[in-house]
Amino acid sequence: MNYKTVSLVLVVLLLATVVGAVVVNQRSEVVATVNGEKITKQELYDAFVANGGASILEQLISERLIAQEAAKLGIEVTDAEVQQEIDRLIEENYYGMKEYYEQALAQYGITEELLKDNIRTDLQLSAIVRSKIEVSEAEVEEYFRENQDDFNIPEEIDVRHILVETEEEAEEVLALLRAGEDFAELAKEHSQDPGSADKGGALGFNGRGSFVKEFEDAAFALPVGEYSEPVKTEHGYHIIEVLERKEAKEVEFADVKEQVKEALIEEKVRERLQEEYNQLYDAAKIEKKL
Picture (cartoon, rainbow, N blue to C red):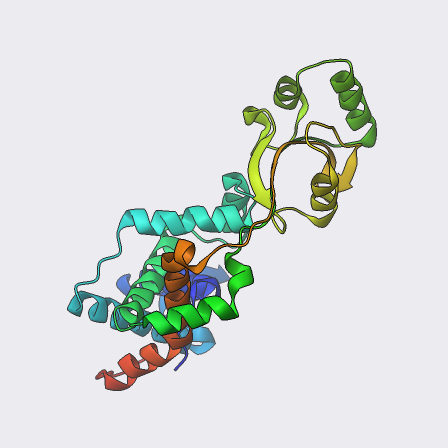
C-alpha cells in the first residue's frame, strides 16, 4: 500500500469532503434535473464511489492509521509546525509570495484547511519514523565526508532589484539611478514585484539556485555597489544591485556536526516512510465496507 504524500493527495481530499457531504444528507434528495428527470444524491454518491471511491477510502484509512500511531507514541503536531511548512512551501515554490500560493489553491479548488490537514498527517508520519531512528557518531562523520560540499558555505550576495514590465521602463529607471535617485525609493514607486517593492526591492542574502537563470547570472557577475543593465526574465525587466558579497567557505566537521546529524536523520526518515506505513497498514485490523 502506497502512502500518498501531500502533493499527490490534494485532489483526493477534496473529493473526500464532497463524498462526506453526500453521505450525511438524504440520499433521495435531488441534485439536478435533466429534461425533468431527477438525479439524486444517491446516484451522485454511487458515481463518486465508482470513480475514485476506493482511492478516497484508502486516503482516509491512511490518515486514521497515522493519527492513531502518533497518539500512541505521544506525538503531537502543533498548528505552528503546520504553518511553518506552509511558509516553507510558499517560500520555495511561490517566490515567497502568498498571493501566488493562494491563486494556486483557488485554481485547483483546494482550501487551506485541507492542505493543512494533509501536512499534519505528513508531519505525523515523519515524526513516527524519526522517533525510531538512531545514528552513531561514526555514521555522522562518514555522511559528512561523503557530502561535505552540501555543508560548505556557498557564495552569497545581498541583492535588491526593481522589476518593471518593459525594457523602456527599465531604461528610464536606470537613468534615474544614474542621476542620483535613491534605489529603495524607486523600487517602492516603480517595482512590480509584490514581494519586495515595499522593502525597497530588497531580496536579502541568497546563494546560487535562488533565482531564475538570467537573474542569477547577472547578479553574481555584478561588482558590489554597481547597477546592472536591464535584465530580461520571464517576469519582466530587472535592474539589479548587489549590496554585499560573502565568499564561499569550506567548513570543519566540528562546526556543523549537529547540522550534519540532522541531515542524516532526515535522509533516513525519507527512506523509511513507506516501510513504516506498510508496517502500520499490515498490522492494523481494517474492514472495508465500501
